[in-house]
Length: 210
Image (tube, rainbow, N blue to C red; front, side, top):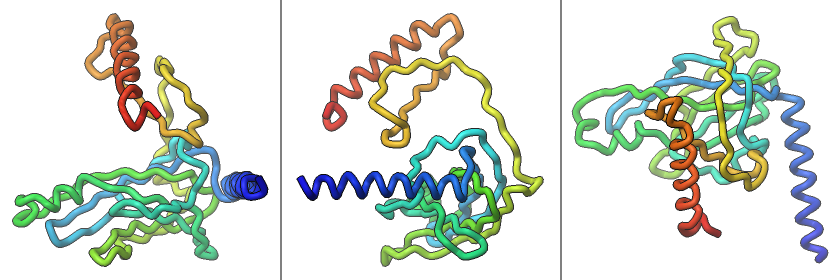
């Protein structure tokens, strides 16, 4: 019982610390970083293409990636003291393409997007890639000013949504979204029925049924 209470206390403390960090360094909005990965089977380069300010941050409040998964990683640091504010690992289609025969003979670019909470102050953004030894090395490092006029401000159009299953907060769960591509407005009832059928099937299969 004592250990259980300690774990609960640690989780509660960590959540409060994370929320405090969010309020200090980030707004409730999101920074979308559109960038390119270019290269061939043996070479990789990264370059920023566009920056966008989106009205909502829908990701986890746990801003530090504890698992270090993924072929690539984004690290956001405070530009004044180099403190790590956000990190997240991710994988790309580019790395899959690098394993093809085509990548042995030609050079290609792939556009990628990664999001982080929108910063209140200037930050430095680093994109790294994991080497064969398992350690990350830097591909790109750039400073971003949240007041930069070149950052595109976006809005979200009001759309009709329907929730089929709610297992808790988005801060603690994975959000799965079905988009009705190909359905007409008159077919929305059919779309909702199809989504419900897919949802029921998905969560009847292991390990999701547990």
